[in-house]
Length: 166
Image (cartoon, rainbow, N blue to C red; front, side, top):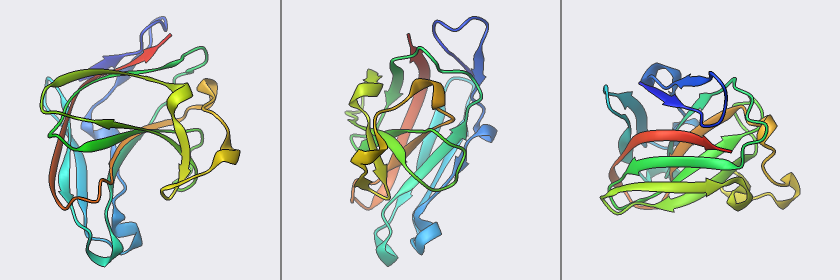
């Protein structure tokens, strides 16, 4: 599956499930599970959220190598299960550290969401880090999805498209 970066000449992101990796609350003792799988028409972020052992999040992320300079946001085409999700950006290749998040709600229908970088908030382990400043488009090195809505149970987010807004 390939998603296109709008407005960038000859650049495509190969978004196979193999390029995504999971970072779930097991890194802190939790037991939630989450992963990204692919079909020929979509990516599927799915799993089971658990609050046991002080857990409560599941996430996937993917490194990007494209220069995002000049972009102003991201357009997601998703179909969710009625839960809240986060789209996340990172400005380094580190496993841990500040991420910029945009929380969005799903309603069971296919939704096209335009997420402007100005509306993302910097967070570290769920806490806002105001000193981190705004997203700097040319420094984006990772993208990802997270669920941390404090609701136990199965989750399912179909990702039908990811485009960079210019």
